[in-house]
Length: 135
Image 1: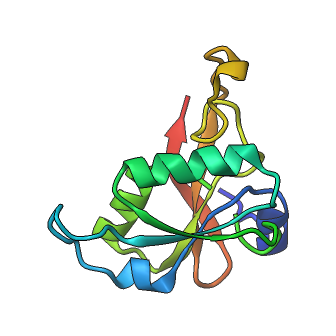
Image 2 (image 1 turned 90 degrees about the vertical axis):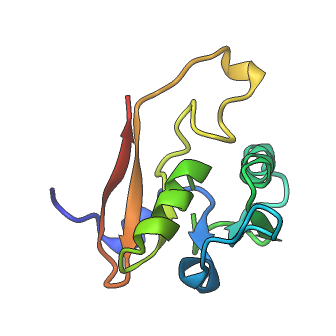
């Protein structure tokens, strides 16, 4: 697989970069707060609001930056949990192009439609690879 250039990836993705602290966090018992996920979104992005609700419903704490999402960008709580368990040398996850059916892009107005998409792992060296595929 040809690596996606970092600028292209960041320019074409939507909303998530894990905080370095979340990557280093240990799995806490359910009674303690979950790992922190930083979300960068535009102030009027309803999809991002739905994504934040999805994360919080799955035990993550969120820190929201309403300054846009040009420098950081998205996907499911399950992949974040896997990332924290496996601890690959990465800075976060991204889902390019805001695919219909991904969390935050799965509201009633989409009438159950789901497009195929890949969750990408963003490596520290600027490269990326497919972390999970949804078809």
